Image 1: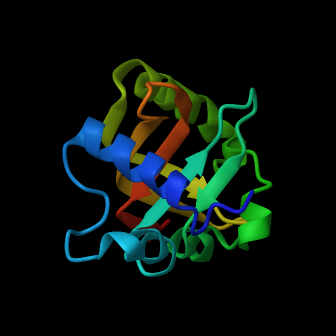
Image 2 (image 1 turned 90 degrees about the horizontal axis):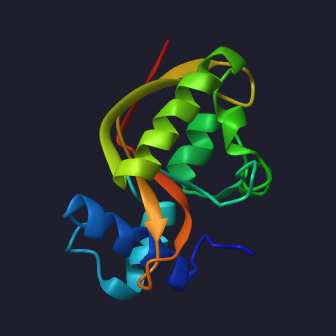
Length: 151
């Protein structure tokens, strides 16, 4: 399913973010009917989300994320999220995701990630949160990546 402009998925992302972090994901000056498009096409920060599979797969990555990780939409949404980190970083990444699951969200995360071509970079001050719908059903995890820097 293509979630780039999907209104229900946008509401899951933004609603769970606001419930947990107590601030909006999208600036208030963006009209509600334009918010999903803005988040995918124009956001100056990255947003990624993966599903609840045993080996979670990315289901969303806005254009900022696609450019940074060097994947097309089709490539990114077929990628197990664990492959966004190098093997030595994966156990640290998993410990962090377990903490997110226990606490609902974690802010200020910093970690090393890897692009499709193998270049390493830092994600900095990331917020990672549980995707939980209005009925409290867990749908995955998402990350807001405000800054990245080359290693």
